[in-house]
Length: 500
Image 1 (cartoon, one colour):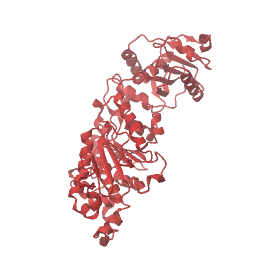
Image 2 (cartoon, helix red, strand yellow; image 1 turned 180 degrees about the horizontal axis):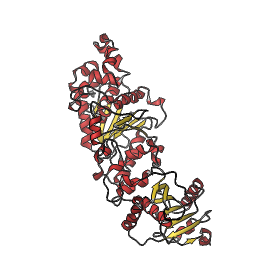
Image 3 (tube, helix red, strand yellow; image 1 turned 90 degrees about the vertical axis):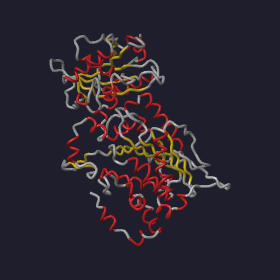
């Protein structure tokens, strides 16, 4: 546990009594900066007025120290962190106020661009920042060029609005809603060198997969390109399964995750409210805020798991729930297949092509299936799909066949998937999706279907079924499981025979 008294006792009080001394001491220490200049933001009724730090706060200060080095000394995309922590852990206070103020005061960053889910949310954050500049006497005394707005020769301010502040020191802080047009944002020749994204996804009820795709395009295609060397902090709580924050967290959990997480070099910094030591003893992430007695009284609830542990599988659903997923990597797989639910186009609003590898134990009354792989992609219905299938067959050499749903495209898929080293089977679905999903769910709940490991995309889709815009993975898994767990399998035909 952090000993605040011991930390403060090591400081020279003579330096703390002098403006230059305070600047010297706080230049390399964001925690001390917060204690000296902004202590009123470090205590509140949640901690009964006590000034305390959680383990997360200490780590955040260490992460922020990387910003002391010029961004030119880092590789593009090297400083892109996603801070994933419980509701009420102080993410916005630290990453939208305390750390930006430290960066601004000491010149570690010259241009901060901050974004929130709504324009009002962002401008409220900037308003809090500006009120400190206007009313914080110690800050005003020690950093006069920061607290004074820059002025033109005519005497008017360069910018001191609800969206942007430009200081006499040259520091710039711009705040806006995430949907604001920001392409090419710069002041003169200066582009943002630090980006903040705070809770940009909203809540599950107001956030659809289409909105997620749009939000992701804004971030990767609009914000990051403003300066690919800029440090980036994305602070948030998992809004729903498959949300951007959940995609990033999936990588940290060692689970299947979308390619963009790696492509954009996004690093998850996950802080569980329940910390466990090497001997299995549990402690609170912030005991002054959340005593273990309270945690233990609430940990069984879905809201606690969702909001405090960032567990995307805790939401109520009409079909699958978190408890339906059981993980087994030890099943004696006797046969396995690749199930494909293909899309006929790759337009933005079209379905995905879903691919799932299903293994099965030997035939008999206790036969069970295990989903070993599940992935959805936007890929044109042609040679690229065939090459992807060949890659999967190489990764899983024991696959004995491929089954393709032909409700869209018909037998065209047999021509596309030509010359595979295994046979191809086709199936045409006649039952409604909800009926097929219900049948698949029943097999899960009877202990007939397992997952080899956590399959992020598939499980997120199942938890949202039938409300998600896409259910292709559900269909692919259901088709593959039906091959092994029903009496009449689909008719098999060789891909070579079909191509001939």
